Amino acid sequence: MDKITIRSDRKTDYTFHYKGDEVVLKAGSIISIANGLNDVVLPTCIMKIINNLIVIKDDAK
Image (cartoon, rainbow, N blue to C red; front, top):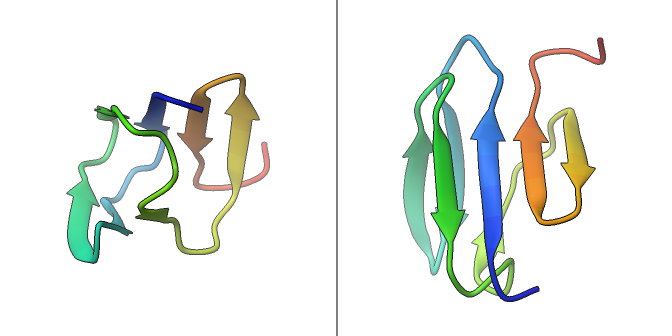
């Protein structure tokens, strides 16, 4: 994947690592990453993946 979008449906901020740096995805916000998941480390959480969109969830509903 060349480009990935991560959307937060959480009520709290979500922290992940990009190129070794900590990145905070604010609750309810969206971020796009140009070079895909090559340099992204997502901590274990509930998520839904739709094509090039990763939706970070609070729960499995």
